[in-house]
Length: 83
Picture 1 (cartoon, rainbow, N blue to C red):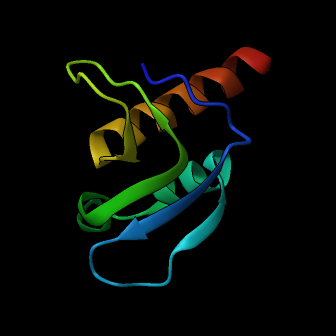
Picture 2: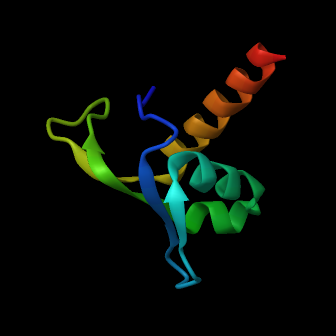
Protein backbone atom coordinates (compact mmCIF):
# COMPACT_ATOMS: atom_id res chain seq x y z
CA UNK A 1 0.00 0.00 0.00
CA UNK A 2 1.20 3.47 -0.82
CA UNK A 3 1.67 5.59 2.29
CA UNK A 4 0.58 9.13 1.45
CA UNK A 5 -0.95 11.60 3.88
CA UNK A 6 -4.46 12.69 2.92
CA UNK A 7 -3.57 16.38 3.13
CA UNK A 8 -0.66 16.25 0.66
CA UNK A 9 -1.32 18.61 -2.28
CA UNK A 10 -1.96 16.79 -5.57
CA UNK A 11 -3.61 17.14 -8.98
CA UNK A 12 -6.03 14.64 -10.49
CA UNK A 13 -5.63 14.63 -14.26
CA UNK A 14 -7.06 12.57 -17.07
CA UNK A 15 -5.69 11.70 -20.45
CA UNK A 16 -8.81 13.06 -22.21
CA UNK A 17 -7.83 16.63 -21.35
CA UNK A 18 -10.67 17.51 -18.97
CA UNK A 19 -10.10 20.17 -16.34
CA UNK A 20 -7.83 18.82 -13.56
CA UNK A 21 -8.82 18.69 -9.89
CA UNK A 22 -6.24 20.58 -7.86
CA UNK A 23 -6.43 19.95 -4.13
CA UNK A 24 -5.39 17.37 -1.59
CA UNK A 25 -4.92 13.64 -2.13
CA UNK A 26 -8.18 13.17 -0.23
CA UNK A 27 -10.12 15.41 -2.65
CA UNK A 28 -8.52 13.74 -5.68
CA UNK A 29 -9.33 10.25 -4.39
CA UNK A 30 -12.94 11.23 -3.63
CA UNK A 31 -13.38 12.60 -7.16
CA UNK A 32 -11.77 9.49 -8.65
CA UNK A 33 -14.17 7.24 -6.72
CA UNK A 34 -17.10 8.95 -8.49
CA UNK A 35 -15.73 8.40 -12.01
CA UNK A 36 -17.22 5.85 -14.38
CA UNK A 37 -14.93 2.94 -15.34
CA UNK A 38 -13.81 4.42 -18.66
CA UNK A 39 -12.88 7.70 -16.93
CA UNK A 40 -10.99 5.84 -14.18
CA UNK A 41 -8.81 4.20 -16.82
CA UNK A 42 -7.77 7.65 -18.05
CA UNK A 43 -7.11 9.20 -14.61
CA UNK A 44 -3.75 9.85 -12.98
CA UNK A 45 -2.72 11.74 -9.84
CA UNK A 46 0.28 14.02 -10.04
CA UNK A 47 1.96 14.30 -6.63
CA UNK A 48 3.85 17.22 -5.13
CA UNK A 49 6.21 14.80 -3.37
CA UNK A 50 7.34 11.55 -4.98
CA UNK A 51 6.59 8.23 -3.26
CA UNK A 52 8.20 4.80 -3.22
CA UNK A 53 6.16 2.08 -4.91
CA UNK A 54 6.45 -1.68 -4.83
CA UNK A 55 8.54 -3.13 -7.60
CA UNK A 56 10.19 0.17 -8.50
CA UNK A 57 13.72 1.25 -7.71
CA UNK A 58 13.01 4.96 -7.69
CA UNK A 59 10.34 7.23 -6.32
CA UNK A 60 7.65 8.42 -8.72
CA UNK A 61 5.48 11.51 -9.11
CA UNK A 62 2.45 9.92 -10.78
CA UNK A 63 -0.09 7.41 -9.46
CA UNK A 64 -1.82 5.13 -11.95
CA UNK A 65 -5.50 4.09 -11.79
CA UNK A 66 -4.83 0.82 -9.93
CA UNK A 67 -2.87 2.68 -7.27
CA UNK A 68 -5.56 5.34 -6.94
CA UNK A 69 -8.14 2.58 -6.53
CA UNK A 70 -6.12 1.18 -3.62
CA UNK A 71 -6.26 4.64 -2.03
CA UNK A 72 -10.06 4.63 -2.53
CA UNK A 73 -10.20 1.28 -0.73
CA UNK A 74 -7.96 2.63 2.06
CA UNK A 75 -10.28 5.65 2.46
CA UNK A 76 -13.36 3.42 2.60
CA UNK A 77 -11.71 1.20 5.22
CA UNK A 78 -10.78 4.23 7.34
CA UNK A 79 -14.34 5.57 7.14
CA UNK A 80 -15.78 2.19 8.20
CA UNK A 81 -13.29 1.94 11.09
CA UNK A 82 -14.26 5.40 12.32
CA UNK A 83 -17.96 4.54 12.53
